[in-house]
Image (cartoon, rainbow, N blue to C red):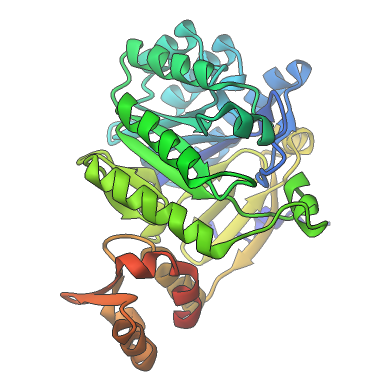
Length: 379
């Protein structure tokens, strides 16, 4: 079988500025999560780290890679030991030109962050932590299959603060089975009281290949769009009143603390993914690594590449993606990208879902609750 990597042009000369690294290991598999993940296997992690560094070195040889942002996601990157993270991050520091790096994010789960690990990450150059709290209600945390409780989550946040991190994101979820508006208000209040620089609020979606999807299909769980819209409205009201800018449907930040990595993705910038299942988009080529960490490690260490599939995009596909992503942000969509949709944009303006801001169309507050429906009519 031909290697898919052979079909990716090596002639790309533009410098790639955004780098994503996927670490799939988790201490426990959450029943709602559709990202590629595996239970932590300590016997495999050292080899996996070598494969990550091997792929990085291959990419550095192949293209111009001078990142302004690096994002370690998962999975749970901090499920790796302090020594493994030290080895991995040191390898990135040695392999890359980091002269233009302004943001290095590491996802972490409460309970997987020790004082030693937090201090080491800061010393190695990580500037931003994204902490997967999800809820401050212990009953909801049990429903979500999380291994931490609210007390551990707050302790982890304080450990990160004590280690000197001044840019911390807290992830929260709403629309959970049985979750009340009062529970959601309390979670937001407790988060605001901690004062993180960034807060992400995600509505639960029932993704295929998850336990929650099966329970939803059996009728055990139900999605309520009206309730979800109320959860979103409460989040907007409380977080904006607390001084957070609502700059993307799911994301709020204090001034100067917007996620630069995600901003690059939303604006259609090229990005490179390292690790099993990671996607990359370079120009009009999108490729994905093998979504299996054992096969990924074997492929990288034996062949130098673990690309499993390649998709060649058209200009129209890129335009549609740009519209759908930009519409979710407070900068909106350039008017020129919507020239073919004058009737639709006019109707959305009349309905109060879109508004014109200079040469761009931006969702109104009411439109944010219907962002996906609006986007579907414009792509």
